[in-house]
Image 1 (cartoon, rainbow, N blue to C red):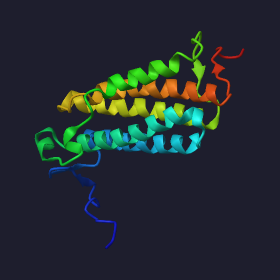
Image 2: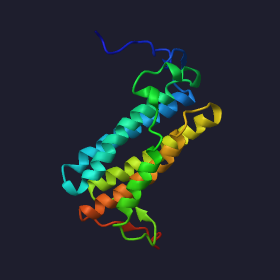
Image 3: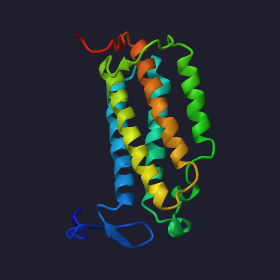
Image 4: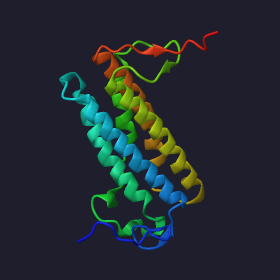
Length: 191
């Protein structure tokens, strides 16, 4: 059996629950951005290695990848077809998902020095990968917000994505601190 279907050769794609839309449709753009975010999370996980000091971040990233997969399925499904989703997608995001992100942000942040200036994305390889994932997360959030302005979305998706970019920022700082990589403060442009 071939993995290619040829059904998208004319620039359209199928949605969950039936129906076809152009590949340029805001719904396709939104779940495509979530797919890219999920890939960036996988790359960040690969950079973490097996350092026990980073286990909480590894667990969080693994869970976030699963949650992004659910978000992608929710976004690939028109609102009137959401009732046709099967498990685990039919349950949507856990109702406490954003609160859980906040608790993890708070736990990591308590061990970090307060920011007195902006910092440049970077540090070690794992920290830099998390900063990159944060930027991808913000782009995904913008695409989802654009879709939400035109069509109803499942509850909690926009809030989760808003919180998740902050989660990634703090995770990057935490990982850099745990691995001994300094943050680079932004000091303005050199004259």
